[in-house]
Image (cartoon, rainbow over all chains, first blue to last red; front, side, top):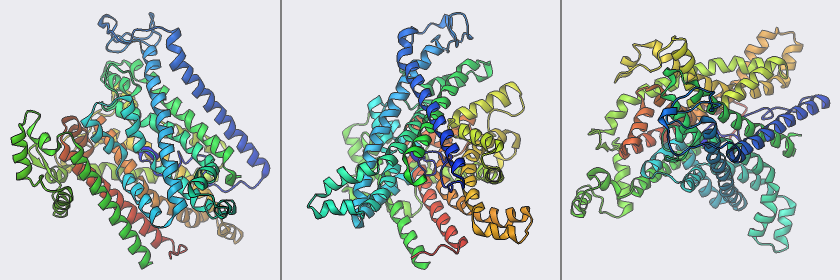
Length: 301
Length: 315
């Protein structure tokens, strides 16, 4: 969604959304404990995935540059725990290297998109009126075009570098946080403490930076978590379609794309491990976002 | 109500104009501009200048934009120089196929997701609810193309039940001659959407179940199935109407990926091959059509919502 043009919500419409608080206090706290347990599981998986991708290659050395056709498409075992791909690259080692770009770009997109969105939404909501109208129509326009289509048009003209990918993905992902923050900003600007700042002669920059944004921080953090999950997914789609990082870079989506040619040869080890890994990481970020929403959002209590 | 409709109409119009500006700017952002894309990388500056003059590309940008919009208003979406055919005729062939795929998948997904969501709401926080929640969470976090690959691997490569490739053909009726081959692409799209819709349905049914009119219905002794049918179902279907509008960009995105994987001859596949061939007019034409469809879908959903729910009063 969000970025990936899902219907617009902050992340998956998971457990707590739109649900009236359960009647009993005991039931509510049970639910909170369960959600936070899932959040902890999510966090542990994210830490484990980071260790796997960034520390793993230091312990498990593989050659991911020079292909060796003698070892192409080997099934798991025999020195390759998860087998090899069509170029003879070790799949386990490639999962680690490919994960690095996914996690780095995913996190960078979340940070950049959230920053743009927060500033945009806070300004629009704070000033209101015609400024708000114009800024939010721009958001509407970008949301009207499915992101993948714009991405493919842009990727047609350039073979992207990681930095370009981050910029382009962020450009197509900041609209949801900007809407969320605008909503917060609209209500916050009428509150006494913000009006007090203005009465005391504080400028609008001060009001926005010191008072509006910090008070919207829980919404921002929760959405940023979902942004990482969405960025990893759309990055995988782009690489799968052949418009991601060009070779020799290893990407999860690219691995799936290569492996999909061998479905009918029965080389399951080229499709299943990488797919499962993507799902696990994305689920982990969604769990974490859900738990954070439950933890930080006072209105749900 | 009339004021609200006019306001929404104006709003949609502004968004559509914005989309045309984006697409227009994209055309001009392309390296070398349209001339380079048409004449190739070896074109001389003289040739490019002649091409620009012949096609009105030497006018100031605002004039060019107005010309472009004029062409769009006349239904002219551009010309594919790579395929040597107008974008209009390409879309006339492929759009029905995409609308068919996406529409059928959407309908089936709603029909499946509504009972699932209501069942989850009734059995809230029980085993059934948790199981279905976990399943939808998993499906939701799964890349669409990987789900499609799994279906191909299991149902096609291993069990040989369905063919791995969508039916081929230039027109929709040709595609429809092989229903067995349609199963996998439709199934993949349905699964992705059921995961999403059932979440909305669950939340909305839980909301309805907590309302006073349900208590009234129960206390006057209405049988449970009647309560579910005439009170819970009807009231919780309302948000699904909005979802139809909101889900359109998501449906088209998933549709593009599915069409590419199953080689389904719709606009998604056309867009993908155009992106590979750098056939910009086709890409931009499809983008405009899909964006306008999205805006129109949102508008219709909003209007339908306002008509269906008399409790909502717009000022």
